[in-house]
Amino acid sequence: MASRAGKKTKATHRQTSLNSCWCLAACRLDHWLRFILVAVQVQIASQPIVFVLVLVADSGTLPCNGTAYVGVPVQQSHILWQTADRRVFEFSAGRVRPGAGFEGRSEMSSEKIRQGDFSLTIHNISFSDEDTYECYWEADKEHFLGSVPLFVEAHRYNLTLQSRANLTLLLHSSAPVEVLFTPAGSAEPPRFLLNNTGRPGPGYEHRVSVQSGSLTLRSLTAADQGNYTVRDCSTDRTISTVSVSVEAHSDSLILPPGANLTLRLFTAEPVEVLFAAAGEGASVSVCAVERGAASRPGPGYEHRVSVQSGSLTLRSLTAADQGQYTVRDLQGHTISTVSVLVEDAGATRTKNYYFILLLLLPLAAVLGVLYKKREVKTQEYELQGQRCVEDSTL
Image (cartoon, rainbow, N blue to C red):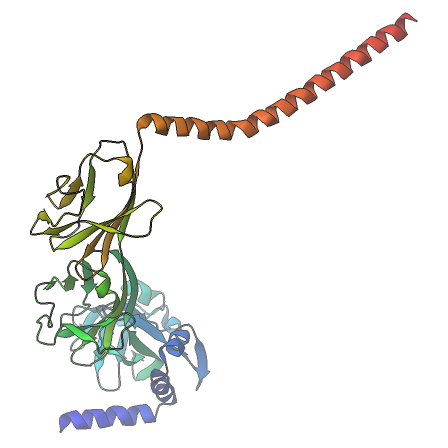
């Protein structure tokens, strides 16, 4: 009954306040409009209304103009912050009294109070803090200084990670949460990575762990691309949305004939290694890798491949081994690609010399033109000198 009475009191209070009513209406607008309102100040009932938007779990400062009381000693200052049904923070005679639920995460600055800044800072903001906050100066009677609607919004990120990397999601909450995954380009319903009991969802039992306020999803593949949503179980509101893209590792190598090629596998799970010769589109199987060893080698690779310490080695390269090597898992997701060029050091040096020569030819041509112009100018000066000598002789 007391809870219902409190809600009724809050509703009545807001109906009698034009400012609060306007703020509640704004709270129902779409996210983009509410974001614009953060920087907007409008004049309603002779009071400026400032809208503050804070990301959940971050800190926010609620402004209050107290310049009318500059000069009043701090020891005589009495400032009250409250909502329609909660006492939030009180500063009285230099002492502070946070309201229930705001202990240890709300503060006012004595120095700013001397300057007429009665702003209140709240840390570790949650969705339950979303409300309209009112600032008062209390002396012989209460003097209303203004109200500040506080909106709490979800975090939004975009991440690009390489295949087989780990994804870490900040939960931004010590309360129970659930984590959902929606695959990219899929119409299927979201999957549970973490349910409201704190347990991994089906298929994620050995890949998901939670520690120190973060969830880790190990060994990403292309199938893990999509949107990850962290949701507050008590309010059913979104805490964060993370859009994840997964890219394959890529590299290019130049190796001499007879050298060994080492390919990192990036996973202990079964994979297959494919090779596409330079200038050809079709791929052939080099081998499969299962339980840390090479198996089912393709024609010509029977005695040339081995696996050790998470890498595959292809021995004794020849020019026929030039091309692209692809490591992919058994679901067909590419883990890495490596382009390989096989040529001896002498050929490489010769190519470098030709490249340098090609760069120097235009420079040599320019220098030749400048030298020719200089010779012409020199001849002109010599001819003019001879003419001057002849004229003086005459």
